[in-house]
Image (cartoon, rainbow, N blue to C red; front, side, top):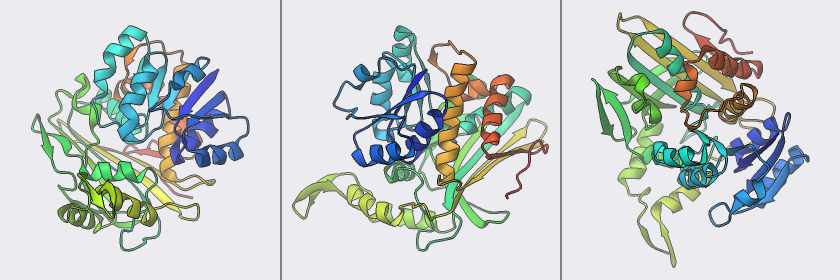
Length: 377
């Protein structure tokens, strides 16, 4: 079985290495440095330097069965569009566009798209789908974030994936559902302060992570759906100040003789300040709380830390994508179209497969009924 991974940054690299334990992996990137790092990790991975925006990369991937799309969000839609014309795609790009617009392509090509196949959205959707299949819910709240274990002022943050996508997360309006109505609010609003064991004080603010949960039939009768990003206290205030000062404006202007935007200048600066290196120990925390019509509260907490040279965000995101890929193969999934992870989560067999895959790789998944242990080693 041949599988391709497009994009070999921090998360794509882990996916390629993990999948290469069972399959022949082809890795595509236009960044030679990324490909060289990957080749050192596993020389059996076939690497190809290709610009997926400008080249017909599918010609070199004819022998692959599944392609995992790990490009940055702004490239995600067009890359998946090309893939789906010939191959099934597992996507973690977090594309800003509506993935349902690719449904016609999957129907014609008899391929499948598994969108938002990371940790959140992704694993969070599977958990939500599983909870919906067993309960009559009236509210779902998802909170997720990846943070350094030790604070590093002033930002107290290190980016475990593309800083471009982090900035996009902060500036993209957040779609939420309140009292049955889908509304759009500014990201960074709806601030919540809370504490988490062994970590301390944290904050969470609204972001646009509900994605397919807003449109799926599964949630149409659930009045309230909210998604938050977790950070250390004060982070959202600093980002809001950047926005107020125009530092994240994307209008092209002349800066020191170069045509660029304030956002690009700021992103380059933050890339250095937020750069996550191997010595930076960090954690990923996903908290899902749901309320039933009878006011019973159900919760699920997913927790992971840096391990074996991989960041927790790379692990939780990448290993979820690997679990989905393995599920497609091992369960011989043949359904075509847009296959959301919340739909997969309603199938208990599929849900158990994914959670067992992650737990075997020491990612903790703990439900309020005490199903699993959240204790950290």
